[in-house]
Image (tube, rainbow, N blue to C red):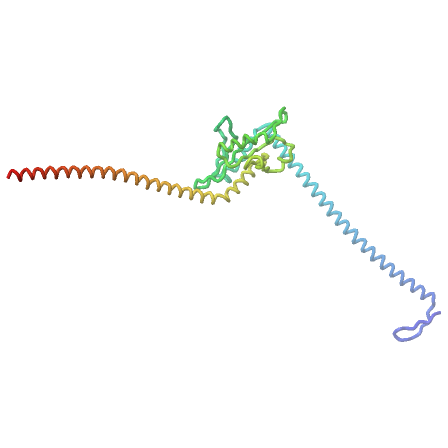
Length: 293
């Protein structure tokens, strides 16, 4: 037996040691069970969080796979579209069709026609020009389209046509030159988008057919920003022409005035001489009359 004192009332109790031991065991067991239950609850929460995270990752993975499949389908479709251009309609017809689809809405004041003017035995494929409503041209592009069948024995490179394109641009008075090409299809340099080759020839670009409209838009928007400066320059040139014309008019007036003055002065001198002769004659007549009287 073991004596235990109540902490509240101070009464002493006789407690069996075995009973006390069992009570302690029960308390420890209850605490253990409580901890186990708590850990089990935490484990269930972790399991649910893992399932949620795993589902999110699986959904994200499925979404990425779907996007990749869509991209693959897109590029396959684009390649098939380009193959259609290669095997069927010409690249020139494709570009002309793409432009005409937007001509009435986006390019109302633009000129886009075949280059039919052969100078020195050379010409481009298309010329694009656009002017403001008051007639000031603010952009011009010489286009060359190059297409090549897969079965062609001799494969050309894009840079093989740069020199001739630059020559055509200068002869036709165009500001920019653009090569629309299907050559070197495996060359990632030309597959990356709009390629600036102005390090070789000034204001020259190389694009794939899908960038035909975008290159016009990019160059056109850049040119529109400088349109106001071109208008001011045109006005200054016009003023200079007006001043030149005014100077020419003044010089013309001076020349005519001097000519007329010389003619008038000559006639005036002749008239004076005639008058002097008449006076001399009258003086002689007068002297004769005076002598006879």
